[in-house]
Length: 423
Image (cartoon, one colour):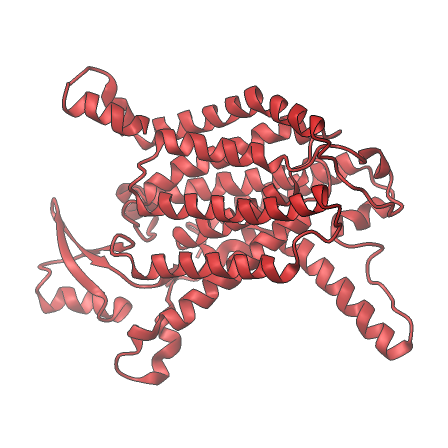
């Protein structure tokens, strides 16, 4: 909203200095700072309110050091995170931008699902919370919405530089082998001519020709296969949102682990959004230029600020837990951010912590069921799942586990950024 106010002051009233709001970097910095400040100012009040309402964590005795001491710690602290994301985004972002709209929808949607889960656990005293079926239905529903918008909306495009005249056969020979018939709406920018591309194209890391069009999976259909790309793209979006959302939920088990890990991931995605939304950087790095995606940086900055601000209260020993209100939303937002900037295939690297936590649970449960069926007695690969609890069982202090997971997260983030040129 403030963006539109300052835009009016700059363009209509010509007040000196108000044009600074045109810069994405300036608004991103304001969003980051505002998010942290809001967390500091309102976080304590929200925690006190949760304590007043006796919204405390119900802890099972799993034999973990210090676990029972967390009994009664306020949960549903994800409300702090959601507030710190939404308010700065509404203040500083262009609210008509399709990417911002998608991210706001995702934040509210997943926040509601997580809130319902926490509400049932805390107020209805049902430890199971919202049934897994309903969670998955909610995640799938969001995946369909996000996938359909990204696939169909006319503002979701890429731009490609073309050598020579757009109408020339030489230019067409440059564009068509990569893009097929999706190229349209020629744009002339200074001496370089560009073509708008509306197609489900993503980035493949670590390879030279590092782009992949989902429609190519349907080549066997023959002519017109591009029209059915949604049959591949939308299910992929659904799978990614569901998997990453659940991965973040699994990671939220130690003080500061999910918030710190997600802050690192969010910062990395903000860098990708900035270079992908800037034509100069995109041309220099040889990556796809995504018009209008620069506004994602505003949201991503608020997202990172919310995680950092939440750590003020959630670092060991935690004064509040985010609950599913926060963890489901954080994971889903990471997924939508990555998909929007066409970097979803980097998720296994960037979100390696989420992935390992998810796989550790799947491995533990799968092996237990297999050995119980075969030997009549269930056996375990790990002392306990998810993985962070395995290390707790081995005697490591949770603060050390969290710090080491953060270090791994930073290393994975650096490796992800390196993929901009390592191919």
